[in-house]
Image (cartoon, rainbow, N blue to C red; front, side, top):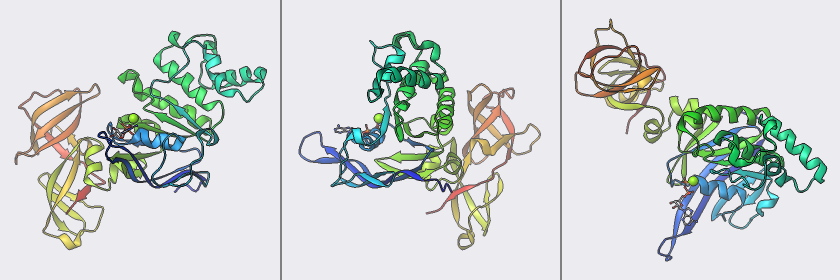
Length: 356
Ligand code: ADP
Ligand code: MG
């Protein structure tokens, strides 16, 4: 566990909006809890409309809170009765569209948030931040002369320059090319880490979330269902929704054999948790695409029913003898035809199971 100082803490957060008919209120965020330590990068991951931006706006102080608390450095900044104005929170925000000023050059954009400094110092501090995002040579350029990725780095430098305690980023990659996003997420992580900046971003893309964040919160319907490291989310999802949402997998039926063994169609698997009370009972076993290995020599066979080329590998959908369909990532030089039967192995560890 991280024993570093907690920078952001949210407890029991609830936020609502007037309903569309104007008659009542609708809940956008409820019972939301998370903690972010100094220097950590967090990410709220969820589909559109689940309440991600609402949470960020509330942390900035742009959205009143109905219940619960938001604490920054142990100080309550938002609750039902307390509301610290945005300009007193030391929180910086990077928006989806970067929101750079089109009529100011790159250096002026960054210097804009440094009004508290004498003007001479302003340019040198701005230039220093521009260096930290590797764009010192673009100081005189205007935003429209930069690529999307460069504009994003300017927006990040502008948010970092006033040295806020926390930076919030709302879908920072969504207006960029899909192929670029994962790389840029990695670059952004390096910049944030190099400057020891605490950040919380939101996205609907799990690959982005995993590429950038130390902690990810899977959100649905205004709630964070699990707030954990990407590794824990993948290997120890707390419920079926998360198991299904993260990665590519399917649930297959298994019969509990003993306290720590479950039998599925493809063989026996070791269980992580004690199931001695359920011996003989059926449970659901998550089989991920990376739990199934293709092996031309294996006697265990499955039929290729669908395949998606992903470059380094194929995502095969395979049908087992029982008719159950599972996924498998297979190196792309194994280009088997649809309808063909191929050999497979089960290589699952960290088996995820659920019972009712
Ligand atoms: P996300 O960022 O995850 O897409 P939002 O936080 O923007 O989600 O929105 C969460 C829910 O709150 C949605 O149902 C949205 O329609 C509603 N909502 C957001 N902002 C407002 C607003 N200003 N007035 C009324 N409803 C809103
Ligand atoms: Mg949003």
